[in-house]
Image (cartoon, rainbow, N blue to C red):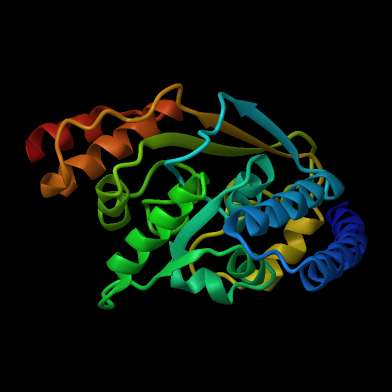
Length: 269
């Protein structure tokens, strides 16, 4: 039975790969012909592409709340699908770790859409991030970033890094929390799980993961946006406290046990 299930998934993956490549080619032609010049035009291009991709690949999206029209949006980070999901919902600009630039397909799309890449420990990255956020704000586009700095399996939150958050706060723009959760509506076999086959984390082969993901049925993603921006109790001089407050806001939105986070926040005061 498992062999049959894997065989069905193989042909589904192959078919969706062809569809995805066709969409990728169409999107490239849109860029070449349309030549979007402004950040808004590039964000609109990415939004159309990702919305089409989610629909054609059969990924269902449930949204609670509304994404802000500008400012920063921070969220937990589970997979490369997070990026496609956020862009499918709204015209956005991403501020991401430099490694994403080299991801297959996703890296090309986000680069062409004007993503600001940040290399940890490299001089000038903070200034580059701050300037990129300012330009996005001036264009009226929200900036999405993931303070965990990397992906996880969805069982909890990783400690939030304070660097990009401090830059967002310095820009004077609001910071709104969001939470992403994946699920499977259909049985894809005993060798499939959300934690391993939708979430992308650890030392895994990305192309192999994408191939298996494309073969899944019933993928659903729920995105929840906070009703109002985070009200920080301190300024960027206390960036660790601000990061803890941001982590608490995202955790509460996702229904994660926040007792440990609250204790950590009290300790940082």
